[in-house]
Image 1 (tube, rainbow, N blue to C red):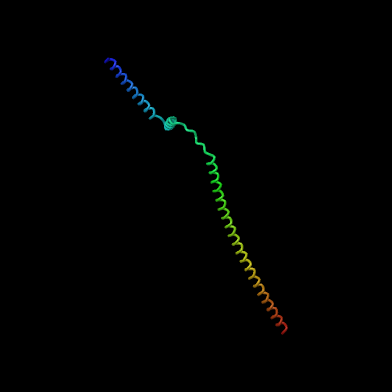
Image 2: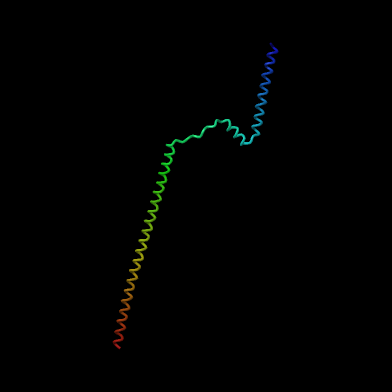
Amino acid sequence: DSDLTKHLEKEKQREAMDNEMQQAEELRLQSLETIGETSRRKGSDREETAPKRRRSDDTINYLREKSEKEMHVRQQELKLKKAELEEKKTESERLYQMIMQQNEQNQALLQQQQQVNLALIQFLTKQNEQK
């Protein structure tokens, strides 16, 4: 009976030693792995999950939000364009008024010049008649 127990104890010790040696060997191999090999090994330990399928509601909501954002951006662009056109129109009107005012001044100067010329002609005519 004592031989049997001694034999069982030796067997347990041998199994424990084998387990320790096996663990030590695994640890040694793991320490020699590259990062890629480690990530592959750890990745294989994980359960592979199927990618989530999106519901059609999610897609519709996404498209609706995208459309609303695009519409908002478009409206802002149109407001900016309208403001730019108004500014150009105002500038054109101001320039037109300035040109018209300049033309009126030129017309007034021309009339003055004509009156001066007419007065000069009349003066010279009287001078010639008196001689």
